[in-house]
Image 1 (cartoon, one colour):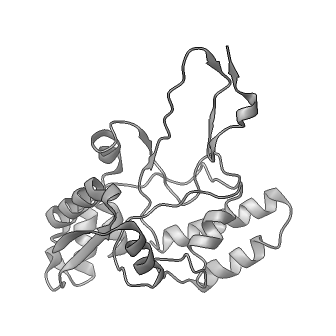
Image 2: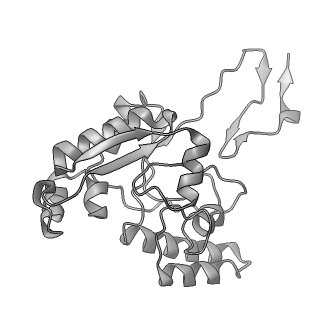
Length: 221
């Protein structure tokens, strides 16, 4: 079912329609520019026919036999939630309803494991892929809000966090990310672009994966 959900999401359509082109495909968990990012991950597919077949294989052809499903998040995700609900109902026959929740209440519910089906994001805190891989998906992490667990994944992350050599550590990150993706522990969605307006007389303004670059480099002419 998790694979079917992912195959029902038209990510390129989301980039064009929901984001007006101001977004990028993200085929994994780690974002471009963060050390440990894997640029060689295969592109995630939109394949309604295979998604329907997988649902039938799971014992729920056209959604028959499933109880009502609630997809929820905050007001900022309203358009995304509406899109997902429409896709899942049209393609898979899932009986999906949308629920909008105040942010603090929603985060509390996610942390308590009370939310079953939701989109959410993560802003990287430090320049290493571990910020995504060890905090979001390690089984005992308090930020593993999807409650996904995989002993092989945990073992690889434990090994990676003990390796100082970047090349070796990044290879372990890639191995762990593949375990997560192959098990459909997550359905990655497009990464929205960061946009900034710059006056012509302001120089050296750049955006990085972590926000703006150092302000002490900016020159106002």
